[in-house]
Length: 329
Image (cartoon, rainbow, N blue to C red; front, top):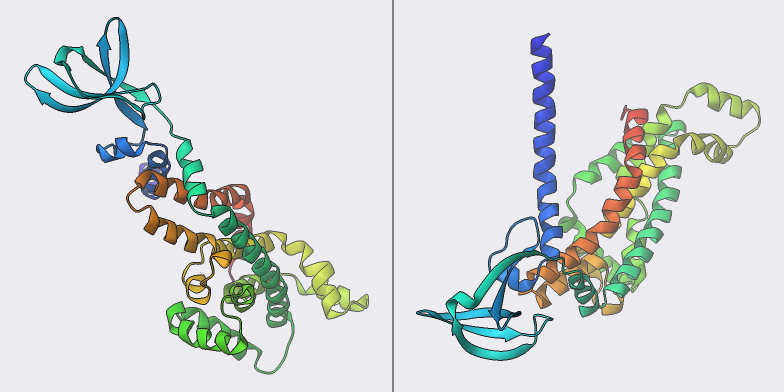
């Protein structure tokens, strides 16, 4: 009994530990995105956006200041307005004891606005949404039809073709990137939406996932549908798809995530700023704002936030789809 509880406790500990390892970088990214660049340059690496603020206390009032140098019992400072950015006086010598310091919790939400407007992220997001949902529609149509054929229809070479499809999942993208570029050049699709959408409307993993689900449906349902006079398409539309909603939701989520995170393909196949998708735009932004860590973290945060929200809303469907399909061969 004690051994079983110890085993369970160790398993939960490892799960929590691994979960923290995965989530800590994300928390640090969000925290850094809300810090000022000045605080980051001073070495602020914590998870809470706390700033150390210096004040020059004199004549019963306090003014924001920045310490420039220390000369004996005198401190050289720059005095700012209340906004903390505009100089009022520069290189002022004051007594060291008149400088007071305090810690202040401050969230710089304006980092997100500045990062969003620095480059046309609005256009990049619209392009990404258009490409992602266009690919999603294509993937659902082709995957449902192909998966049903591989799972329930009998034809010569069915298994050979299916395993040939599966073997293509082992081919890394860089291998077929150059041949694809030449093919799309011949078709005149380079630097068009067609290059971003059409090659991806057939997804091998989605076909595999749906085939596994369709194979678990009892044969009695198909026999009853045939007796009632249903065609193959009617069986797919009226019986198979309605009872496969969880796996369809998972397929849709994986397709959206893949399209949203796509980088290498759109980088090679498009060059126009009007066709630039989010991940490519983020890469160009990183080159322009390489010295501003706060803006880079802000742009990264609002780039990944939609996927995080999508997963949080759809995690039950993802889990139930894998449980129901069982990933049986």
